[in-house]
Length: 101
Image (cartoon, rainbow, N blue to C red; front, side):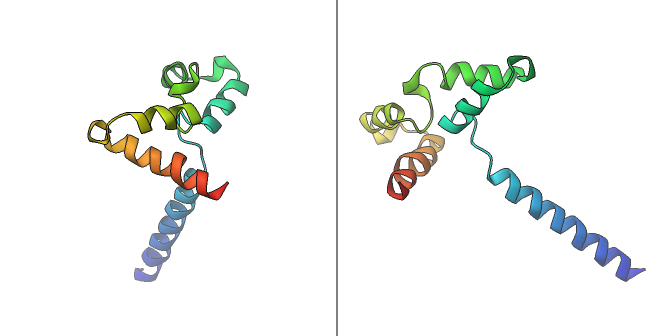
């Protein structure tokens, strides 16, 4: 009986790890890759959240997270006014991707 529960536990752990790895590959909503993918997607398949995020980050290039204009705008903003999310996005899209290109 105990062996069955350990096997079940290991399966659950494996499935959670696998789903976590797959979700890590997805583009962040509002990023350039996400905007491109949404633009190709049928608008009837969008959720309300998708439409709001698209309107907020994909219509005007300077608001698209990770775009060159977005990075430049954030560089001009005093760092004391940056949100925690802006710091993380800047590091991911403006520093790491710039170095890896």
